Image 1 (cartoon, rainbow, N blue to C red):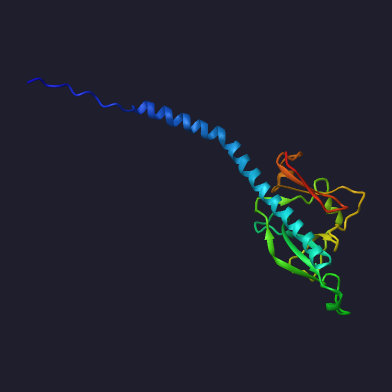
Image 2 (image 1 turned 135 degrees about the vertical axis):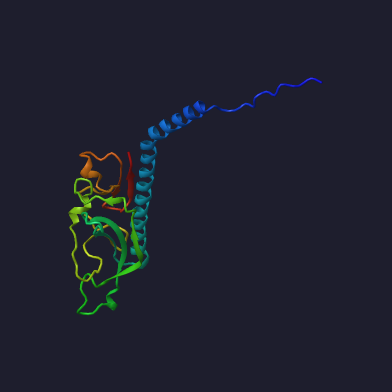
Length: 205
């Protein structure tokens, strides 16, 4: 009777496994910044789409109800004690004259439409006039608005924005505090607003 020699089963040695794990670790570390950049760009794109949709909605409501409408961009306090940032939005429409009273103020004449919209906590609308010329419209600090200071982008009943025609108007979204870390923004989305028609254009590097 012949005894057969049992061949060793194919497998990986400990050294081979360690080499593979090391290579995977190096690849993961090397690709982390790239993956983080993709995630940041996606957050920015989503936030920009949100702002653009709210602007289009305010313009459409102004035309639909034949009245003025505003998109208000609110300054929000940082719960961790940091600086306030622009990242909340709300649409309001002007009440028809027949509903106004002698005691009604300009702010009181506007009524909110829908819920407040909040951008991602890691995204902000730049409050620097270099990056967002809408800051030149000035902050409104009305006690009648419980949400605090805001920038108002107004549309008339024909859909045209209440913006100075000879000036370029735009707003820029970027990662929170990005302008404080770098002199030149690397990752951002800019929305341009045509002062005559309200048409929007976006730019993202």
